[in-house]
Image (cartoon, rainbow, N blue to C red; front, side):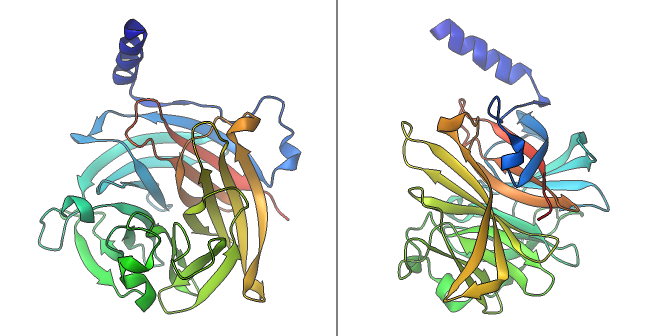
Length: 316
């Protein structure tokens, strides 16, 4: 057993780069899905610019420069050159850095838990944090790479970590909408809210509510704005190693809300007990017309993987 472990360790250390992966169950009828998976990669990099590559929590893509940004929930920022056509034709690491305060100092360990990331309409890189809820604008292309430029004012109910289910269930997801501006979502509903009633918050005050998936502990792990202005959501359910691990991709219709709940549509439900070889998907970004990538957090665990899945949403 020890020899097998050391063999696996050697292979993991010696192999760096991106490799083909396959999360799709054998014999699956893809017509039943609202998405088409175009390409699948496992990312295996030990260190980039001497910074450990692990625990990726979100993505943001800048099409003009082909820059795919990845943020780790340990306060680390990575940038890849990435080209997407019908496949991922190029994916190469460019640089890495640590997220820093305005003065260039490091964040304290319990304040560097960066979970959400997006680019706004002006190309500014925005990152959200969980244990001390906040959203900031960070340098992405200068000598101050990864340094905080500005913090944004949150809605009152999101400012106090005591309003969340726990300090580790805060601002998990981030997106930018051309009409509503910065959008964010907590991993689980706030303490005062129904446990199955998820909410998307605009910093300007508007809210949208939708019903969480029926699986136990179904949590929002990522959001992204779609081509039609609606929201693509990743919900993740993990209730124990012996139970199904379920990742759901769903669409939330922002302008079709009645009786306090917005219409939703499940595009794909990936269940580990039904053959899906999934991992802890936490990041999501639009990379082209109807095309997106999602990424998994390996939790810095030898037995988990960083998976990058490229897919398109089928037309309704």
